[in-house]
Image 1: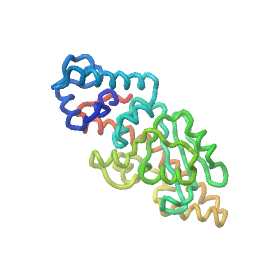
Image 2: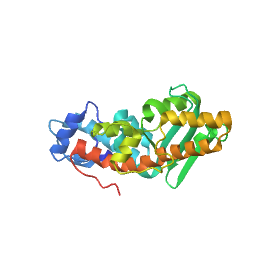
Image 3: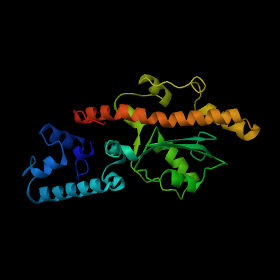
Image 4: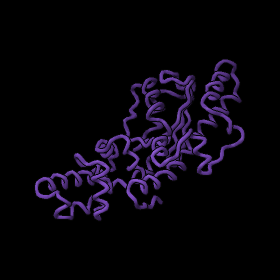
Length: 256
C-alpha cells in the first residue's frame, strides 16, 4: 500500500489521491513515468517526482521512520505490509487506568519472539530498549492514546518514535467498534477460559493481589492475559489491514 500512497506529496489529501487512483495512477512509478498527471506538469511535476524518488530510496533502505515522517500519524497503517517482518506488536498493563499509572507488565511480540517484562523483575529502560531492537513499526490497540504516553512517562529515555498502526482507529475506520476482546470475537478469535473474563479493571486487581499478597496465580493469569492481548494483535492487524486498503483504495493487496 505504501507505494500507492500519494499523501506523502505536499497538499495531497484523500480526494486528490483517490482521483489519481481512478485515473490509473496506482503507484509512485506510474506517477513518475507519466509526462503529465492531471494538471500537474513542468517544474511542479519534477519536484513531486523527486519526492517520490526520495521515498523509493527510503523504502529501499528500509527507513520506516523516514517514510512515517512523510505521512500523518493516522496514515501510518499504510506501511504495515512493507514492514510486516519487523513489526513490534505490544500491550501494557498498569496499576491504574490513568496515564500516570505505574506500568506493571509489558509484552512485545515480534517475528519469532514474544517478550514479557514484569515490574520489579525485569522491566526497565534497558530491557525495553532491547525488546524493541530491530522493530521498524509498532502495532497496538489504543496504544497511541494510552500505552505509548504511559510508557514515555515511566521510561523517558526509551525511544518509541516509530511509525504506529493503532488498530483501535483502523477498526473504527472500517466500521468496527468496541473493545479489543469484543472485536476479537467478531473476527473469530477465542481466548482460553482462564482469561476470557479478564478486562482492564481485573488486570489491576490481579496485579494488586500479586504485589500485596504474593499471589503467584494472579500474576500468572495477568501475564497470560497481557500476552493474549499482544499476540492476538497480529491476527487482528492481518485481518484489518486488507480491509483498510479496500476501503480507501478500492483495490486489494496481497499481504502473504
